[in-house]
Amino acid sequence: VQMNLIATVENKPYENGTLRDAWVDISGVPMQDLVDHLIGHKVGDLFECDYVANPRDQSVAGKTVHAVIKILNLQKIIIPPVDDELAKDAEFDSLEAFETRFHQDFDQYLKNMQKAVVADHVIGHIVRNSVIPPIPQGWVDASTQAMAAQHVHNFGGNKKEAMKAVGAQNEKDFVPRFTGQAYRELMQELAVRKYGEMFNVQPGSEEMYESMLDNVKWLSEEVKKDDGASA
Image (cartoon, rainbow, N blue to C red; front, side):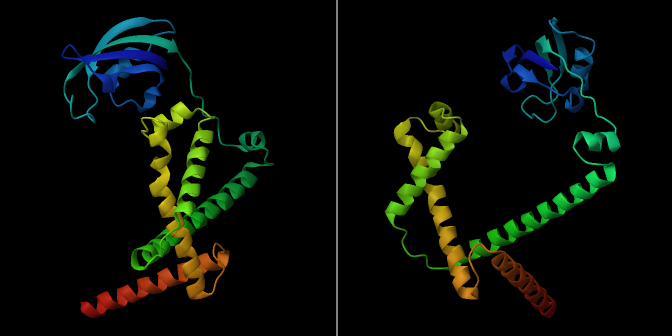
């Protein structure tokens, strides 16, 4: 349901419970009495109701919310049966082919996640325990400018909304918001190169990630041995 819901608690505005032009899946609403009030209404209905506040919001837990609600739109979610017809709609020959592809994609997703976690762990360890040479300010400035420009692009070129998203008060304050991220990414890049030199692997290659995974497994086994000896 899409609706406006103006909420008050004890005759005071309750902003956390107020909705404006919001779509809500009522199957996920924790306040069952609010759901009961919504059921049966049609588009255009304007009504008032009371319900017990969301128990997840400790500021109003157990209190009664008074709401003025306007129903703007209604949609019903229909979940189709998982069968060959569904698979063909997704351009697969059969449900079996669809499931095979799903498992392949999911296995690749897990592998990529494993690589990312291992890389973050190893690179983070190098950054924390290495003496990183000073990063030229020109590199930092160029990287910061590029990140700011990409951020604006992600907002469709709307610089005002892009600035708002990072909490920048004005244009002068906007670009520096990305300085910390620029430093982190440049340090990580230097750490990747350092790892490549240490283990004679090409930075960013599959061989590098396999090497990192082997080192993490080896370190885990050594820690287990030390723990066992201590016990």
